[in-house]
Length: 472
Ligand SMILES: Cc1cc2nc3c(=O)[nH]c(=O)nc-3n(C[C@H](O)[C@H](O)[C@H](O)COP(=O)(O)OP(=O)(O)OC[C@H]3O[C@@H](n4cnc5c(N)ncnc54)[C@H](O)[C@@H]3O)c2cc1C
Image (cartoon, rainbow, N blue to C red; front, side, top):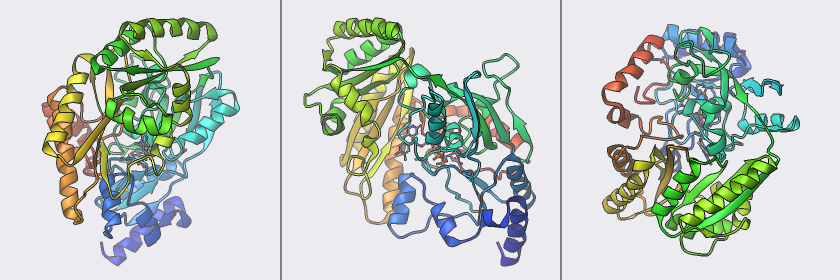
């Protein structure tokens, strides 16, 4: 874009959001070009610059966001939304330049409504801040992802995120009442005041998981819950993965624990040993039960009876409590993989009749095709019908040349995700698609992909919203 046009557009954007909230400074562009996508970090680590936005713009509300989108539509320049930049899929990277729209000025908490059991807040609020606001009134959001302190409400909605207490409280979509969204043409809309209605399809579900490709979420009402009277933990060791899956599946036909997390032998022997202190060989499983004292008591008995039936070794409450205390330590430096290592989480979800096969097939595919890779996994989120695999590959010896490193990275991912799809899994469970997995969306959906493409074409005819993400 030539200097003259750049200045013309900048002056319009400044008019929309205020001069201090529209930047073309290198420092602002650079800090909005690398998220938690391994490739973006590797690229920067090797001295190369990731694609940058031409303008970094921070609107304060839906009205200002609408003005920015109208300008973008007129000039037909791309708009990429940036929440906390904690995404792992390169979703917030402005791969085609244009406007980088940072939502963090939209961080107001409007209402902590204890009667309606929700918080109304700007989509740029960091989730930890809304948790604190709920806690002040004796309530909790029950959304506890490891990135609670760095990712935003809008970011979790855009990627359909999930926290550690998901088995009882669900994913972010289960926690959402109403949303305010600015459509690509600048229209400001609200979804219905309550979800789970029969007034046609649920509009929330069009925008949740849409990764900024169909609109920008500017406000949301997120559910809050009463603090449980009691939260208790129990750690177990399984000596056979099939027993662990069957025990988990049977337990969920009886009641819903809050935390339910199974680590395979490799992860038990490494991270769980290091952080939680479990020394024995086997697959560690942590269960948390919460609610009223009476219910916790009854559920505890059901848990012990069910798991004993499947030969689980009872480790008592100590390791489970330690796990809860240290649940974010898993991501701290020294515990988490980091550059120069190559690593990634290929999370997938499937019903119980497929999940174990997917695990073994992915492990085999990665270990056979990439003998230099280690494969470890845990199963973090469980439902009555199935669960998800949080499987990771780690490669210590990464090619120095960034182009070769990129090719190796993409080859490992294509192999792992294609194996998951071939065995009944889904491209991703809760980290989203972004630029990282966009190429695999058509393989996942086949002819059904045309539904997303038609939605995109209708809502965003100029194709300005977050191009090349989500395979769109
Ligand atoms: C250490 C660590 C641990 C993590 N643990 C978890 C975990 O436990 N559970 C989990 O679910 N995720 C986890 N993540 C991933 C990450 O936190 C989530 O993907 C989160 O949803 C990203 O939110 P963000 O605000 O950082 O979004 P960004 O990275 O800024 O953006 C992500 C995507 O959302 C879009 N977007 C952002 N805001 C909006 C908006 N208001 N409207 C429309 N589109 C928008 C962006 O364009 C982009 O496509 C973890 C990440 C890290 C770094």
